[in-house]
Image 1 (cartoon, one colour):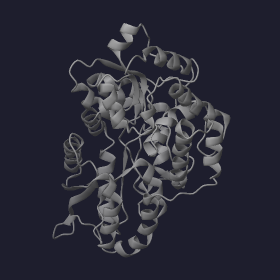
Image 2: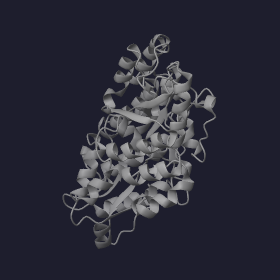
Image 3: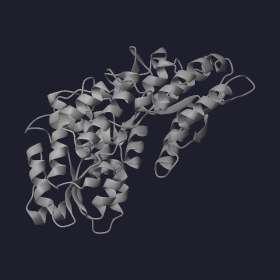
Image 4: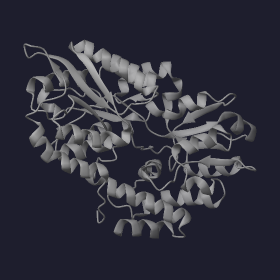
Length: 409
């Protein structure tokens, strides 16, 4: 990759390494009894809003009970997590267990801040290979991720039925359906093409499913995917505002009836269910051609063990992290937070309770890690992708030129 952008996470990871040399001898902020036995585990995560906060509280407490310790949980806003970890490292109060957004795992592991889980013989079980790829660094496993989310196509069943339109399964069908469903102030399709990582995240299923690759985005395969988005915008099937809409904005447009279809994720299920009279269904994102696989990125977080220098404590933390991938913990977390298990074998029990998750669960075996090929260098290319999307959609450039400029920039 000819372009390097270091994200805040990458800079924080670089800083963590030297700090851990100091903090390792200081131990964790957990509690021991007078005999030196560990009686409490300190856990830090960024699930600081309900329902996720409360759901995960029960899951974490269940695993604390299973390993025989008390739980001391600390939640922080997502944007503050890495800064919090840096502060804890410098004050020698690193937690026993830490949650990280999955694209950050490799960057933090590269700094030497994490304990390889292989040292404790942790079993990833049936977690899909694509998900595991984000938890690996230089051949070692550093995180276990119990649940995940991805993208699919939501559609308003009433609007499609009135228009006599079937849910599209291919790109050509998507363009036709979006055109047929566009009427008055209502657009056929809404998605997020914003100039942030959200825009890249939404573009990846189209890029990857067409054979595109993040290592080199200046290829015909990626250009064809970007041309699809440009065609939809130029035809008036999408609002010009998609280049400024977040995924939350997209959900609001869909809920208000301003878009007949949208590309979005299961974190919106609670919001949509609260809208009186809204009838919708969910199908996989259309593939380039009939029968082709749809390859989507996955979201969600992995659970890691910081290096604290306390062998007994890290061993107990490992038992705790293993528990989080057990069937009971995974099912409770998935149902409660509208996510899907990373182990496909655990999905049926979840889908039975939350049928709207079916289209997301069926994608798990083909899910792909954003950091799978570029590792810690992923943020730079993620930036290049959303810049190219913006330049092609509203910057007056062809998809080919926009991608070439972004790749060589």
